[in-house]
Amino acid sequence: MRGVIFAGAFGAVLLCASMAQAAPAMAPLDQYMMPRDAEIALAKTAAPPSISDKASVMVLTPQGYETAVKGSNGFVCFVERAWLAEFTNPIFWNSAVRGPDCLNPPAARSVLPHDLERAKWVLAGLSIPQMIERTKAELAAKTYIMPEPGAMSFMLSKEQKLGNSGGHWHPHLMFFVAARSDGDMGANLAGSPVLHPFESAPEAFGTFLVPVGTWSDGTPAMEMH
Image (cartoon, rainbow, N blue to C red; front, side, top):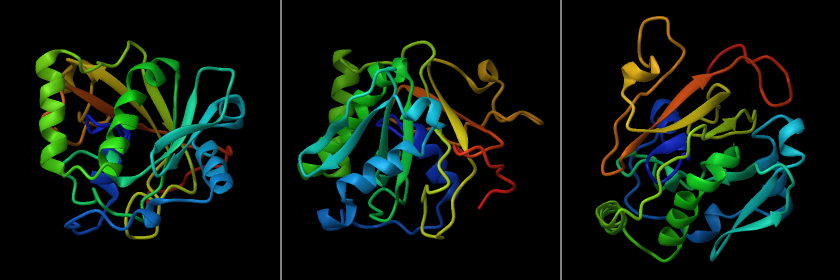
């Protein structure tokens, strides 16, 4: 979402931020897990408290993500793992990655299902080629959910770890759109803050990044790491 199954929120940032080498396979499961309370707290750092304090929060379990906190505003916060990146991203199996993300209601309805499905595939032991084939099958069957209009998410956590360098990328918003070109979104143009740094098959829609100037706690972000 984002990072999400279609390369999404997470994948774009990982491609920009990671210095990692490709890992050949999934690490032991316990390396991806977190204590429940710590994961809830980290997930909530994705967005300002005015949003995350009323959001639902999901945590990773050996069976997949489950709701740990029931919210009231339709937003859903959770901590993405590296396997929510695009399939070709060399960081895909990096067990150190933690990407707090908070999806708005349209994204929670239409983007989050891919994140949850991807996690279940990984935990069931599927390989990357198997996951690609399943994605292609969903697209062919027209059961693959496209993002709703207005779908977006917040990734504003100071505590995000999106690569091996130990630093963090810039706070940013993610916008999930179907059948839009870079030109339609004003992305990757001189002076434009809208970024679309990759293409990822077989997924059929894109995720656009917009860096912003403050972290979720309101402090300024002076530079990228």
